Image 1 (cartoon, rainbow, N blue to C red):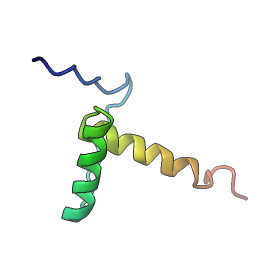
Image 2: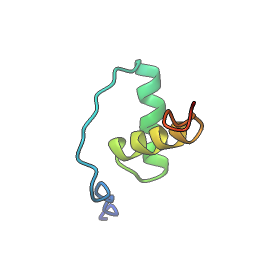
Image 3: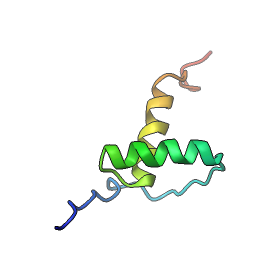
Image 4: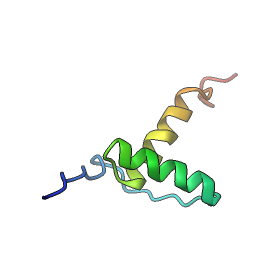
Length: 62
């Protein structure tokens, strides 16, 4: 049985970032990635984008 292919990064995503997480946090992200059939990096990008939606844009702050 062949697993479905996971999508590659969107075009223009070429600036890698590194972060340190606990084992528990990594396990949660890995479980989420598997559940949503995403790569680990794709899941982290999605979580980052969701977090940015709830953070004020520094350019908009006066």
